[in-house]
Image (tube, rainbow, N blue to C red; front, side, top):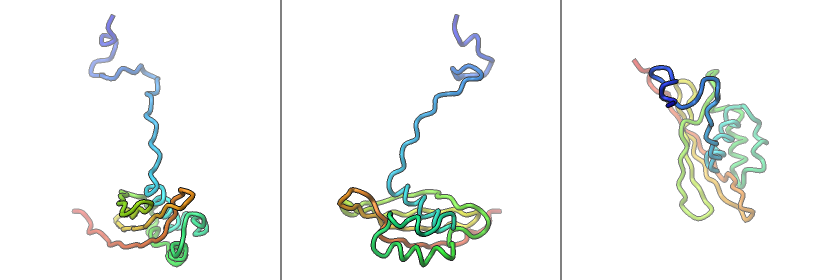
Length: 138
């Protein structure tokens, strides 16, 4: 007996009612995506600046300490999210990344540089922000 005859009309999947379909495992975040999420948490006021202490080098920590008190990515009462994050690799052990951050009707740009140390850990070496308010859709 075919399972096609036991399915309700219009139903095409092969799962039985009450079963949970197998979920594909989530791919781990790439370093630039992981850092985008962490930087967003700090710059939106969800996490303190010292949360990034072991993940920054050079002036990056000072840049975060300067930017974070104003929570540039957190105003407006809505929780910001990373819309997209892309990167380029200008040299071995260096990643330059850029992310668009959405907070309600506001879209901000965040750029950052990652450098890989001798211990093969990635660390943020620079952070820059920019943004503008989008016109309302009608």
